[in-house]
Image 1 (cartoon, helix red, strand yellow):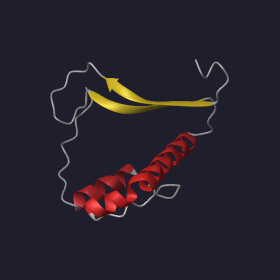
Image 2 (cartoon, one colour):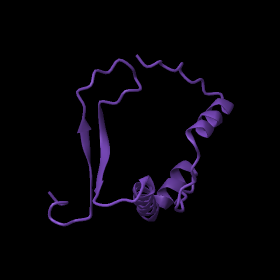
Image 3 (tube, rainbow, N blue to C red):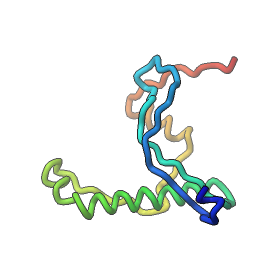
Image 4 (cartoon, rainbow, N blue to C red):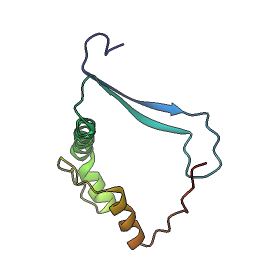
Length: 111
C-alpha cells in the first residue's frame, strides 16, 4: 500500500511463520525477516547496495549504544563494515569453506 501511495522504497522487519514441513535442524520455520520493496532498480546491485546500507546503519547503532558493553563482556571490538561489502562468487565461498574443513552435503540432482 505504501508503494501505491508513492513511496519508492519500503521495508519491514517482523516475524515470519512458515508452514513448510521441517525434517532437518537447518530448516527455519519461525524467524525474524526483513522484507523490502523498491519501485525501480537497474540491477541486483541496487538491491544489494540498499541492504548493505541498512546493515551498516544497524551495526553502527548497535556499536553506538552497546559497543562498550560488548567490548567489556566479550573482549570484542565491534567493527562497523564499510560499503560496498566485499563480494565473492559462490564458487569461491565454497572453496573457503572447504579449506576451513567444512564438509559440504552431497548435491541433490534435479528430478
